[in-house]
Length: 77
Image (tube, rainbow, N blue to C red; front, side, top):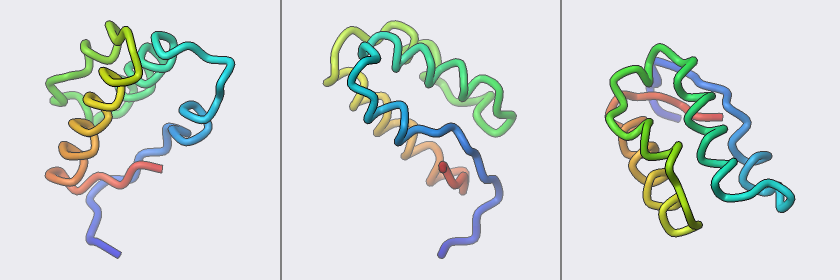
């Protein structure tokens, strides 16, 4: 296991697996949850989550979120 500076619990798996929630709502929810975390205040793509229109866009921003987390040693749960 890595040497993590921060641990963030945003219940991402539960949200992404919920088929009754639209992709647009998932993006807005992720943005809301990340915006509460101090270690994500400098994440440059937070606003893009709020404007997600399809699953491909959501996947793109999730990839960037995980890349950011890896660079800043943030463990996302």
